[in-house]
Image: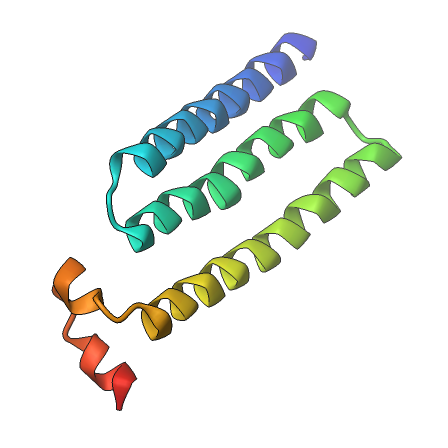
Length: 111
């Protein structure tokens, strides 16, 4: 039973680290700020959740498990909201947004 828990935690940990590595590559690869924010948000939500979930599995049923689960819940609520607000700020402030991307909804936001 202990080996099964270890293997499951290792799978979640490796998945989280792989997702984080891909998102870091995306942050440096993309040129446009909204694409970079999407890659960073991927790291915030998915990679961090997978790593914390592997810690929950390794920790077992303790008080620390409850704390880790509460951290996961907080991050899953706070991270997308902050990413969305930063993206909305970029869309409203950037004067050259039409030059950088082909978004037809930009005209609707300006009205």
